[in-house]
Image 1 (tube, rainbow, N blue to C red):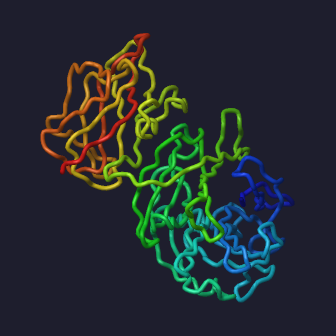
Image 2 (cartoon, rainbow, N blue to C red):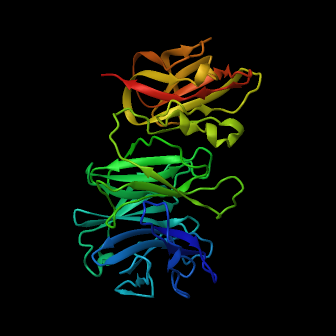
Image 3 (cartoon, one colour):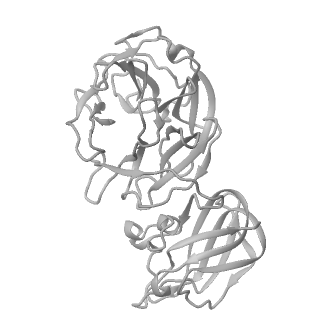
Length: 419
């Protein structure tokens, strides 16, 4: 595992390496694998490593900048025959210690720029993914190399442009290739640095056209950010090898930059079309209570519960929760799974649809007044199928818990599709 970590002597970041031989239970001590070259283009940092092995070499892409403000970043590359180094850096024509970027940033110097690489070899070709954050937006871009075994392959990168558009507080993308499913799989933290942090996942059959896909199961830790997906040395997820996501997070009491790393085992499976890929909520309890956070309403677990903020003894209040289906689909019904005993179930509410997650319209005939609390999953049939990507529960009168305190609380929001 290569990680971004504190630097020294005026450098912000070093790349450190450690490894485990027992599935991530025990690890070697960190060792500095890659550090800035004093007085060179990357003197400020070697940050955000992404690694791949090609032939005898481990290649580590990293972010650095000549701008002391930490903006205007560019993508650099180093290689070594050992994962812990020593590394030699790409110099523009060969390998040495006079680094030049392999992807430059010509845009607004006040923006982040280019960096945070992820490298995958598939079909004999190298796919290099990286963040492109400029004045027009925040994206994942792709460049490819047809023959990454050539000694000078960084000279032959071909830019393919934007492949993923980042939305909201979304982190950089890490990409691997699944041999079993014959597709590229990408992960990113979504709503980074918040109690609603979760994992956004994507898939692609060609490595260039990506669509959102579901992430279900245990919630990531509070204030998760900068997730990576494990793989073999060529960037593949292979049968029989346990895969993990690893990410930094910020527990209560921890300060900026003081971040532990969390490791979660993950498996890949096929979900039916219409499975929720994400969502959003109006509020959560106390605004920071991870135990009741928004993604619990679409994690596939009917035992975990999302709760809005408290409205005390007042039932007349507006709260909402929506789910994202990843694409426009014809929805025929919406199923709401309640909290135990129907606590916090909406009393007056509408089901709404949206194509962009920003502009909403009531679904005809899906307005409910004085609705009794559900004791089990309740399927609300629509009068006619509605073509929509986003579905929202918009409540204006809230149910109460066993203490008479009013919230919007739901264990799951899911949909059924028209045949």
